[in-house]
Image 1 (cartoon, rainbow, N blue to C red):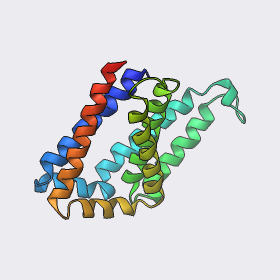
Image 2: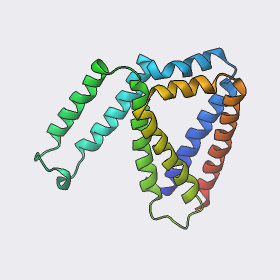
Image 3: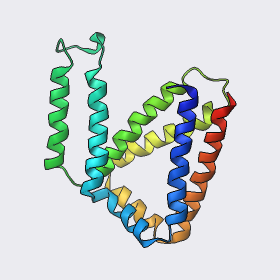
Length: 183
């Protein structure tokens, strides 16, 4: 991933999320949909399935130096695919939150490798600091996923909270999207 991609695409994502929160904070459909995500079967399929698929693609493309036990990545893929499928059946509670955490960590890995070594670029710190903060939050929510439900309840208890967070995400997303063109 290039420095431009590592800055521009997170900026677009923050713009979209900020617009959703800012405009939809008063919409009962948006609020109920977002509050249902932590235990939603559809969100579980999307986030956990997407995270498992991305992880399996990474494992499938492991180099020979990473293969310690087996000569090929195929046994690893089969083992991790079986574990991901077993999670659907044995630990379905808040699996959408954990899947979203997996996606955040894998995306952060791509973003941080895209900005690695670009220390003079003006977008280096504005991208890396929130990315590392997102990893810390993802690790926290992966350990205690019910806190994501509690956070959403707190966020939507008053519409102005979601609007303020949406406005902050919109502003930061616009900053990142602008900084992407400065290198």
